[in-house]
Image 1 (cartoon, rainbow, N blue to C red):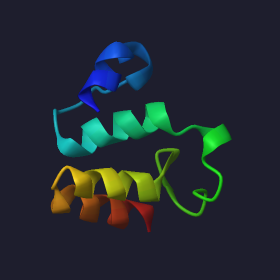
Image 2: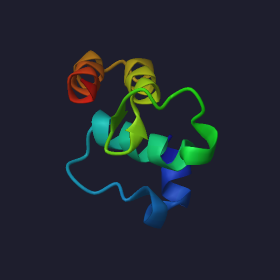
Image 3: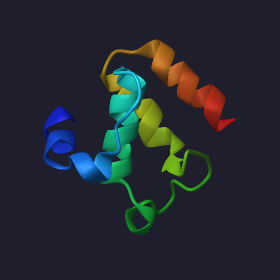
Image 4: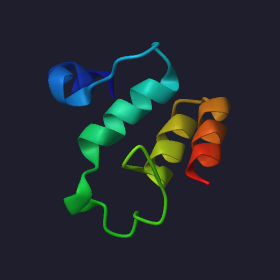
Length: 74
């Protein structure tokens, strides 16, 4: 994730306090756009699909960030 974000800093718009949530949010924003989100439109966080956000937070081992995603997604 860090490599992809580092090579696309302008598009990533990472900003904010360094955290797993912000890292995942930037990565999902770069990786998933409207054209390749088929089936993921049921819920979103800041125009990013919810389920990839939860998945990557869990893959990073951050249960709190995954829970935060779930709460923000409804």
